[in-house]
Image (cartoon, rainbow, N blue to C red; front, side, top):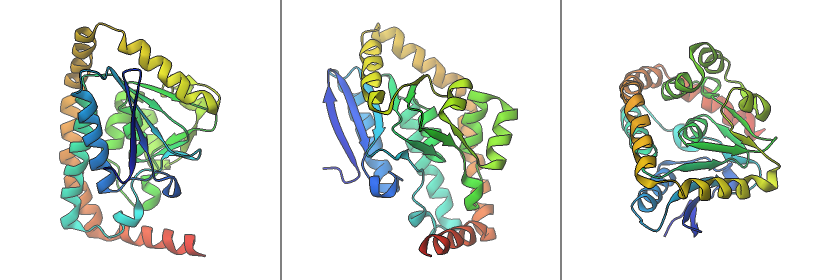
Length: 253
């Protein structure tokens, strides 16, 4: 029984829907654990040939980390937190089956990173994507790793330091969105792609995905270890707590 996600199977495609629309599908620790369990179950099921991840509602795929949870973090919690992300990203990176991201809205922060760890991304003109952690006083480590792999260092620096979100047109131009369709066609397009990939020779597909993981493995492990060190320094400074407190005060007005 899941609390924060919905799961379904259609035409040999496993579907995971992030289901906290009142929180813009922002994830907490329990929600990530549910996603990992669903990914692993689908990947181990011989009757599933492809996976889709999407979000409930029409505002956001996912707003990233739930700040209601993060505002209570301290130095001691920061290392365990990074290890949780390592497990989540390991689950995504280790899939033997194709993963299509059906982006029904904004993908920000860690959700932007997770979206980029999918194999193919489908969105609509209202989608925005980016890495706004700096605006919450949170240092960015895994974000720059995956952005540099996708975009190169120059654009990664600009997006990390400004914290701005790219619109769907820019995301398509730089290659982060492979398909932009009307909002009502995002899931049908994702299903079309999932069926197409599900029909590919499975061994070749698995080996291709395995090789992509091998190519990026050193950078990923470096990002996790750097994240443990950097987040400890960040939280020791008290800056994330101050920035998040200011955010919640402003939102309460």
